[in-house]
Length: 293
Image (cartoon, rainbow, N blue to C red; front, top):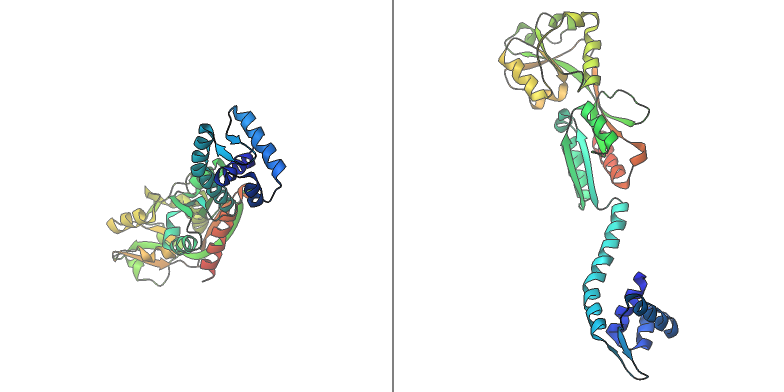
């Protein structure tokens, strides 16, 4: 059975005349009659009573016509939706992101994408960088926004935002009065750090900052969110290293001090080349537009 046979029958059922139905379908009458007979043969029922002057629906034909009247428009709409999905105009896009992206470019990117792709459901999933790498490989997310990505041959990385690292110290501490601090100035304080297993690139960037003195660091606590790190700094005599965009979260009891040498940290968008789609490309275009601002 072919879909066109059902469409042919529906037009014949509406016209109750093979000649007029053939004109609507832009085919000649004999092939139309052949296709209807083939449909009847495949269904094993008689759909039409035919005479030289008149065509009428059988009970089975009337039932099929009634059901097709509901099914065919829905099927046509489905086909249009499928084309929209393939074009990236409809469907779902899941984006992983590190928490710091939510204080920089992500809100503007998400807003722009939703304006341009209103029928694509955008799902934002907060994950650490390492969790996003796993999610990209298993297909749980379509693309990720990571910090200080460690290169891999199987993923495509585009750097979108570079910012300075700052030392966050209690506002009551003497270091808070300085214009900038060196890594050596910080080792006397306990450090609120981050798990290497979940944030390998970012932790390696911090280790590079301290160099040989990294072994002198004393861990006060390990956390995965910037706001949690700031809370620990505000509550005691400890420090942490964060991107300068932390200013949007910084309580008055914490001061962000620039680091000598202005070390940098980078947000990147990561995708799986084999799973690129128009929706992903549209999101990347939004990232590019917002980042250029």
